[in-house]
Length: 158
Picture (cartoon, rainbow, N blue to C red):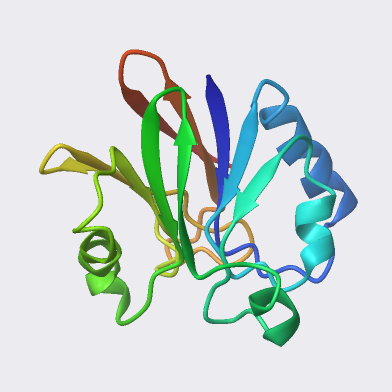
């Protein structure tokens, strides 16, 4: 199973060329995860296929009323914690992991830091796809997860 992953899009609407690129990259995805800072719900509505999302710190009340702050997504027998994250960017991975400390998760997908990351810590994949619109390292990115006998992560830099 392939899952498309986004975070920190910070878009009121999709630029046409960027949406076409995302749709092409996620053409084989059976699910898309968005880890918050969406800004406008129409951004989710234009994505192909089913989407599971959470609200982030920059999302307004209209997004926060429609989406939870965290959730666990189950897919192909795996449990994926989904949260935006909070606090100083350098502490975001640890804070995101600690949020799911009492839950059995195989991966934690998060955003907030605007910095892509795919690292296994204590047997849990910590995955941040980075940001399409405002990456802190200057390179826009998104990601894909591949679920089979395990979970593999891919960061795609645009």
